[in-house]
Image (tube, rainbow, N blue to C red; front, side, top):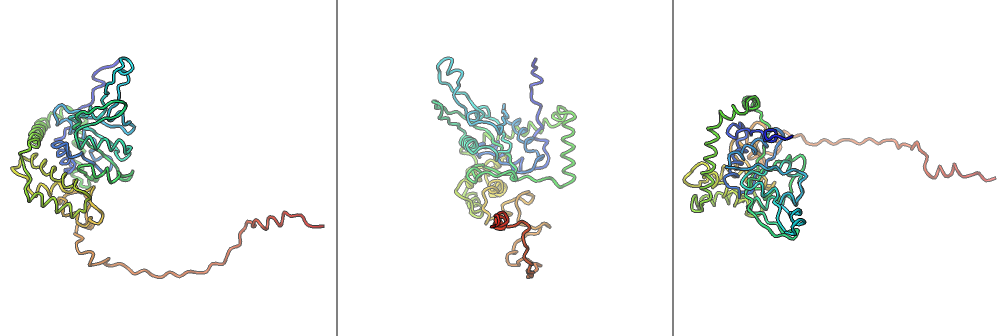
Length: 363
């Protein structure tokens, strides 16, 4: 016996009520405004609202599905394959859609994406960046639209993505545990209130949700208009300077940064794209592309409250000029004497001694 109510998914936590993690919320909204950015990669520990935010984002999109890609999925289940049932019954070659087709217009969520096989990640990122899924296999040639917001999460301690795949993610956000007591308490109170009365909690945030949804529809329409929000020379100069300072490979960072700045300007209803828009999206674009030798220049692209890589010390002071100051207070290495140790005789007799003991004595 089955019931529709039992099979229905529970109502998601409203996106408007998510407290904390401002960089995660901004990156998800930018990817929703322009899905062509290539998705959002979220690095961080458990319990930092990764899944909650991704599921809540799908609710803001009109009639948007939320599709989860399991770790054990095959390439056929992801991109689609030949419909064997129709082929065997009616001798007809027909395409059976996969998860990419189901996620069209919504959100495709991949937990622990760094544990997926490279072949799945490659096809996933291809479709996310191009908006089209192309299948050439099993005697079929098929293509269909696949515009979705790709959200992948990973814990760097459990393995990393190959640099070629990592670079193809549009934005990257690095989450940290919240250390502010008042902020932690606000998040816990909101979650407890939602668990106690989900519908009542959603009703209290319904107006804010509606405003976010309408703003998202307006921003997506503005981004789709090729004549709106053109890039100025000042914007191009700011993007080039930051990409060169980060020592990134190729030009993908420049293209993603320009599109992200335009998406942010559209989301805020700005009259034009400014260098400030570039500054605010730069860290999410460069975080996973920055070369190690450019780490010292990272703070200049991050907002003051960005929870990302920093060159400052534990007390918040800048480390500028540390190369000239050296390691202040370091003690020189002291020589350590080496005492001679009396050689030890082995307790187990050698192989030659064993042979001599075992040989019979001559008469």
